[in-house]
Length: 111
Length: 115
Image (cartoon, rainbow over all chains, first blue to last red; front, top):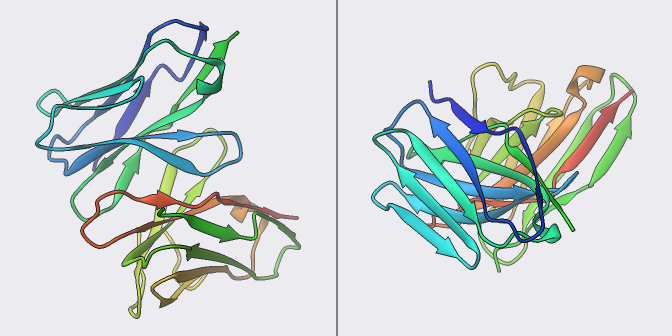
């Protein structure tokens, strides 16, 4: 059974700092991996999707990497802004479109 | 593009009543829709997968007779929580996928509170 763990559970940083969020998964036979953002009481916004054959994806200040063999992914956020404050969720896809989510990392960027 | 809406955004009901939640893909035809449940400070947990015109596939431990899913068209799926109880209080989120697209597009969620 696939399990997804995200560390840390919460992170507080000053504005402008670069930061890394971590995600690990127990079964390396994944189809893809996605990072989402969730604002309080809201739905999910897809940030980046990495296919199993890819090593990384970039979008603006965000860069996500994937190492299937070690069961790890990182989300790098450059030059963080207060507007980046949210919960970041990692989810792995098993090929049948089902996603298994981690509990998320709650990020607070202080002005 | 690829916008998913949910209605209502929040609902409060008495124990024993049934509640229907709608999930709509506004600008695309969704081949598959998913229903998730999220308890406070917990992961999103997949409840069921539904394809238009066929019966939903429920995850282990999810009661299909309690959580009725109808996927009547390529743009609408409904989740009915029957005889709701306080332990059913949760945040329910749907998502939808397009054909040949791995990305799941999520709705804004529905907060259900059962008194």
